[in-house]
Image (cartoon, rainbow, N blue to C red):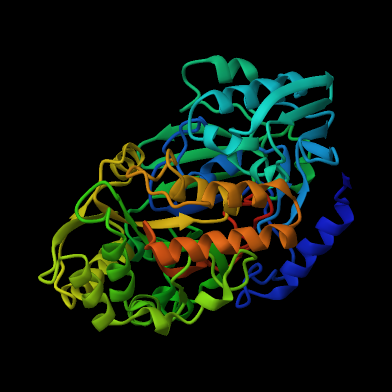
Length: 509
């Protein structure tokens, strides 16, 4: 099956987004079209990157990685696949082998040429160990068929791999940098910008003049500065210190009152409570169900996000293909009496206690306090503790937590990876070994095809079965991504699946 994406289609999609306007979730208004190609875009971010080595990166790192790296399969901020470092791809009929035709004339930041050897080196390194290994477990062999052609063989049908290769697992790193010891702080990719300075609190990137698509880049560089909480980040844009930042839904009115442009739209990120099923009372499905029914998702959405975080009791919100329509009515899943009964059936009529850890950001702290109050209604005593970003990532990966509030990107790189990470024994975020019969087989069926219609049935069955068993990660609401920009900054698109495009930003100073 030949899958070829034409550049004309990608350009048409981009144009459509530009016309959508700032309120609908595309890009900010374009003004008179003039811009300064040498301007540096100043972007306020909530924390430092975990690592520029994709093997060590964390789920929130794409905002940094997408600046310096490119993946084999491209993906627009709207979530559509397009050519990346591979211009064409073809599966065998059984989806057990994929051949990639690579882009010619591409140069790494250190001047080395991009070719099939670099692709083989990166994929072999990523599947050997690290954060991307779980996404590539079904890869049997990666082989260069020529200077610009690579074949990937799989142990079982793997149609889902196109989405995987559009994320961090598809990044190609220059081989000598990949083999070195300082990739975490000195990335060498093929992206539109190169890292030029990395210090605590600030990351600086400069336009890469030898980028294969350099004409697309409409700014001279990027400066990312860390502000830990949402109010401070917004104030930095209002004051003119920064050009833009992500904001919470409840800040939109304040941003508009200060003459900032708003870019917002749906994303596949959800706020959720992650439980370690090996700790506290969470090994009991009745306890997990009790907490599921104790949460008033609609109240959280209204009080914290002005209704702009869609209440959901399942990982995939309406509009994403794995969504289960029968689970959409969240009013059915807030029932204090039922939650108390679940605890009584679990032998805990007087409740129990546990600790929730969360990031210092305002939205996480506020959500922790609301959950604490809601769990008190069913007799559960909840303690709260704040962790800094890096410590939170480390503790979550080690399984060193009882419960934690997370923003989970459930479709990155592919919905099946969320299932593998959270619902299968050995999953990256399943320290308690949560498992129910049938999930592994259903997941294999979902991953076999690249057709979402064929994948939908088994994926929905997994979501339903896990909900009925008491989920180890309890969804709360689906995040509406929002950002604010000072006047004169245009071109930023909503990263629906977590893919960022900074190259198309325009700045009129």
